[in-house]
Length: 396
Image 1 (cartoon, rainbow, N blue to C red):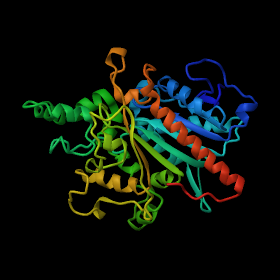
Image 2: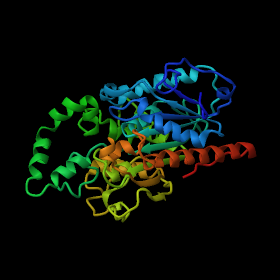
Image 3: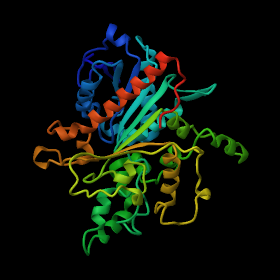
């Protein structure tokens, strides 16, 4: 592979037809970084991210694995089906030689972040206090404009102030005089439109699915098994929160403006009222804010019945408030980004530009450079601990 050890779902280079390459350099890799694209995406959309990351990974013991099993219309099959495909793909890669991996990290764009959170819950083990995912030490989880809370389904109450409303719906609802009309029509025919365009995945993103998969991802953990047993429920939920908590670091990136798909607060695990006071129009392009929230001492999952009554400090939607409380307790690095929109160059979507889907401006590479630097720091930190023989406490 090229410097940095790039691979993908079938052992080929992204966009190439060559068979799997096995050489001394690849066998020496000990840190696996898995990249997963978003809705209607493909591995080709991540090629520029891979190139940029390799500028940082060239001298480090890291291999990039780009998933290929859920490209384009396959992403409409739902988080569970996409996640099962990704699990099988990674099982196959990790079962093949050479494989000296010790740690695993994930980078997910948009829907890819939710697919990853499903997968890690099903491949998580905690034996004797040592947590592993796919049998490897979980190192760093990175989500880029991921809709962690789906889309708020109560957006007609006050579409301007509601938390985690899909931005294009919010923009539509704020059109003077007539804005409420298209928003109302979409609300009335939402189930039909969502199923027609986005199929099963759309139902899940709009929190309409029977299994409530997005709520599960942010509310079930191994600590819930006791409650499940006491309540007489036969089926134990997968340890989604426990798996996410096992990573030494968690980072999320969000666009502060111009993202038509995922709201800023949704991507950065916040309430709308908790967003930093940034003058979005005047802020420079690139990373405009970065903050690290500490891990809470109590990361046990919250349930709707446990939430306090309505308060200005809470999210506007109870379901989303529950997910926020569960996720924010894990501790996050939140990175706020202002991404250029270049319509004349065929790059009109900040949601795609943040991963440099089209390589037409250096601003599009900012997140790839920043995230890869964080990954390198994580690798150096754990290798230092290995060399010193320390246990390595969780980094928040």
